[in-house]
Image (cartoon, rainbow, N blue to C red):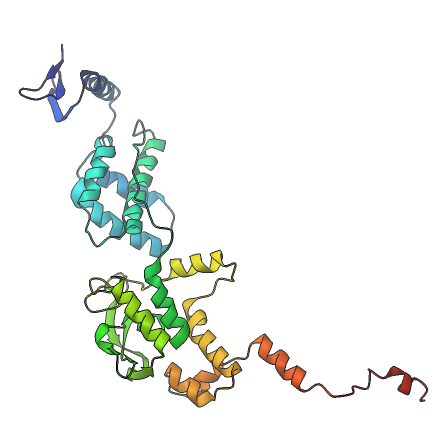
Length: 337
């Protein structure tokens, strides 16, 4: 019998004549070892090539059409997978291997980031299965993701109350928040990275520090964010002091909230700076005050943001309504020539 039990072990393996003993990681039952022996014989008879997972991923990336940003992201995902399973053949990747892989990921990765890496692995295996190089696609256990993202609450609260740019909100640090009097010093911003360099922390636009007075509700939102453990040691919105290359981690939660509320999807810039300036102008605040809040160097830039809303324009028209319009008293004018 070719299949035999390993010495001092409960696992089984098999031996093929002329190809030596096939130990691999061992099989739990004799039936599994027999099935593996049959597949191995078929592969040898048909001359079927065995592919490494690294080669399969390269084939998938070259055959798939995707945007440049998505391709860069999946290449970074593969860099996290390659050291652990890149050397395996695609037939050796099963559910237990994937469970072991998940335990080796960095603890800083959230459930969504882990699922993105597992989605890439699943796509590669499915790609090879469709082309006949893999008998079946193993089950890939995904991480459970909470439906809500409360850690983004303070991010959007600061956006809609203070009118800060996205890079400026990411750069808010604990040391820049003053309790007495409540103030926020905005002197830095996270600059977007690219393929050759990561996102960098630098001075804010115009290289001028901006000191903003905080109301009690904004200060309470920052304290709540820190109490919940969402803040890092230095920054409010970064656990380890690093930022995503495109500093766009806020975009998906923002779109999810807008869809849930049935709102038109707007960018962070429009939800924040445009909205704050428009509401301030509608409420009757001076352009100089709005300019100081947004940190604009020229008043012309503020005028581009401080556009009146439709309700404010309607109030303006209603305020100019005459007491007795000519078209109301039709009888008094019908007999005149």
